[in-house]
Length: 330
Ligand code: DGJ
Image 1 (cartoon, protein in one colour):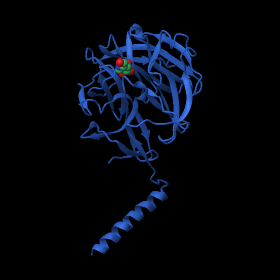
Image 2: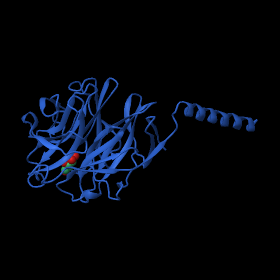
Image 3: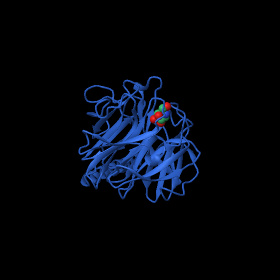
Image 4: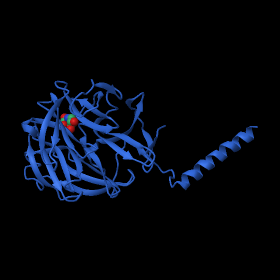
């Protein structure tokens, strides 16, 4: 009897494997390990903090701050096909070179990369700051190709608003937004961008007086989700989640997500991986290692939904099938 049961299981597994092979959907699990430094194909530590991912031409591009000298980061770009092998594509925005003030009176934080379908250009929005955070400005860079060269299009206060920690969000219809912590870290400003993504054309204040930063938005089905943090410098704090049916109005109250220090991270972006069987949503956060900022880590965690609510759990290691969009946790 027991022998019979075993045979049924083996047959089922073989049938499943055969049907997967017939559909061309062979399993291919990639292991994501958290808490370690990533190295690029030349053996150097991947320095790409506070950034985001852009999928383009079958590769994922990772933009972020090069914190190897702690302050005045250049902006690095890497690419990968498997989230294991990281090819350094270059310093796409360079101190003193891309802009003469950069590395002198200005520094960049939280560079975010997007592709504009209408213009065919790659556009970077970032926090454009003075050493004591007194400038409270943003900057925009653009290039014909993903790896540069990038040129500065504009720098200043979006809609004349003091603007610090920031992110971008591109909706399903291509409408792009810049979202930043405004008015001395008091509000979140949601700025609708012009069709060419060069300028902020209107502003809506969200979570007024609630002092949020590190906003990261994703649009799933009919719902917008926003993860954000409190403003505690480089120290981690409780991440919160809010939802809305509309991007510029009707946001729910903030609710806790993850543990009380966001698993020692601060959100940098939410990565969407569309597979043949499912879409995976991944929280990408910075584990800032202040005062040893060069050793900051990039942490990736799978987002799940339970009873309609977004849930974030910590895993030292977990797996993703990039083709099928499936996630496997321990
Ligand atoms: C938190 C922000 O999210 C970072 O980008 C950086 O500005 C630090 N604060 C500086 O304390």
